[in-house]
Image (cartoon, rainbow, N blue to C red; front, side, top):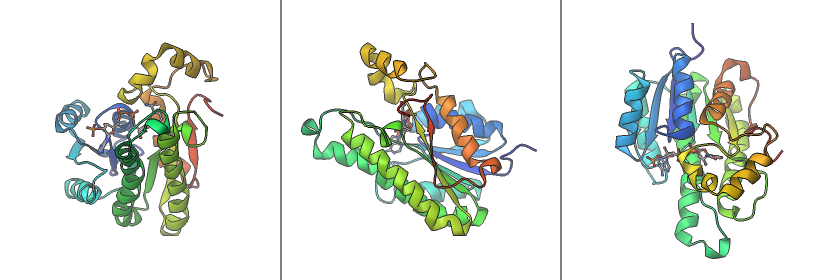
Length: 245
Ligand SMILES: NC(=O)c1ccc[n+]([C@@H]2O[C@H](COP(=O)([O-])OP(=O)(O)OC[C@H]3O[C@@H](n4cnc5c(N)ncnc54)[C@H](OP(=O)(O)O)[C@@H]3O)[C@@H](O)[C@H]2O)c1
């Protein structure tokens, strides 16, 4: 029997990048997977590619009420929830003096509000299955990089949400962990990766000497969600090839 047979995994932002790679590894272990995002066409195409154990829900995690609608629809489609992967995220980089209120709100609503609201809606279902939450953080949540104050602080909040929820819901049998990727080859990092100097610097500072692939991050998520990690909670696992150690 495969490790995630009869289990249901909800992955926000699962239509692309790290979320899609995460869906692939859970499906390979026998799970039913629900991916969510704002673009129906992307979710439709990805679900078709992933096969009949994959389902999708359209929703904007940054808007009040939508996290509940996403979780409710996932339950309606699959009947239970064993793992929530809070992966949908928004990135911004630049001097704070040039950052608008709207940009700060966009980053905080997508990375912080959504992580809290989706976790709140998923917890009653996860308590029933003794399931777990995996949040997707970033190496900059603990490292410092000029131009990252908004994004990095939002991911630091994700780390602290992870530890606090681990303490709060451990007694109910729910584990909460986070994976912190370094620079990973996805749509989100296109801007950073297309800056030759930046790319060379980031890879140069990565002890394992290459850029991360979405599958590198997906494997860390799978590991933390599995029974082998049953005594691990409240941890932020760096999946970065050693960047910003
Ligand atoms: N790539 C990196 O170098 C890197 C490094 C560290 C951490 N991360 C983190 O990894 C996670 C995944 O990002 P990625 O690199 O895989 O980039 P990506 O391919 O751009 O994925 C982001 C996903 O989030 C969804 N999303 C964004 N805003 C949303 C919203 N308001 N509501 C619902 N869905 C939303 C997007 O779908 P729609 O646009 O269709 O909504 C997209 O599928 C993020 O949390 C990111 O911060 C990435």
